[in-house]
Length: 467
Image (cartoon, rainbow, N blue to C red; front, side):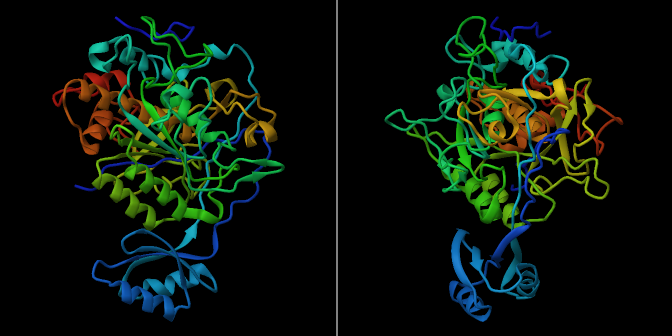
């Protein structure tokens, strides 16, 4: 039997999923206000029957210019005047399915200082929370061998603020090109903070934290000890990470808005590795309160291409009138993930609603936060908060979502070992059907179908019951 050691004793077109941010702790610096949408831009989706000439005529009518095309009939326009007012006018045009301002979205995270033995704080992996312990312990379920840790052969795209591809606990699990260089898709480009240029890097830190929760490296030996640092292991430490940067150093989609987030998702779906590998799971720990049909379109595109979307539900659970599951997690086709604290209670910040699918550990305050990797270079978190390099703590549905993505990677890896192919809908079914019921019996708006149980997801059959 192979087991990970964590230094403490670890006792169809509608079903892929989206995610959102981290709780800002008391005393943390307040990020600058989020721009609601990009000035002078709208996003449109045309009817299937609308011709290219008809769209050109519409642009001429509204004195708009084409900035870019995401999918056939889905375009980004530069306009004069107020984007919200113009979107309403465009929506009345029969040639269009929708028109929306190019809304911005944000990861909602801030770290707290490290305060103790780094290797003893992965409570979120224990058997009394998301139960990765038992999933790792049984190689017949996880597909684990001495040379292939659980999750091997599965590529997970982290669509976020980027990933530190040279972090010692992540580097081996970043997808590479033919020359062995790490691959990094950067949709943001110029990303300046003070005298630092974070182009092609994770200038925020959020994406590196998410990546570590999914696939921080484990040593390939009979005890599957934690990786090079000895401090951390991801939920699927054999999985590979494709970093896709769609937000800037402050975790803000900025001027690129929904279009850049959507483009990052599409590029992840379309990516192919040097041996023909493709992304099977996309983790999106980003969201906002405004509906975004362009994100619904790209979510459908991902589902059509057999990619599971896991998305954070949002962190406004304590804000009356704003505690609903955010977008794009609220769209059909997303696995919307809420957060729990130690003791398996719903985190107060975690958004709730009928769209919520599942919950996973997202942390609370101080020592109840989630421990994972941070960039080895100074990033926005370390520069603005005084957080040490390499590792740190965050809380939020942003941290819950990657645990669900990691469990999904284990399920896919197991299916590959058994020569099976699972659709996104089948993966989702296994995750929610084996969740531990919390709150009111059955589905409820606080916990969805319950708490992630990675081991039971691997052991599941269509006749398995729920706890």
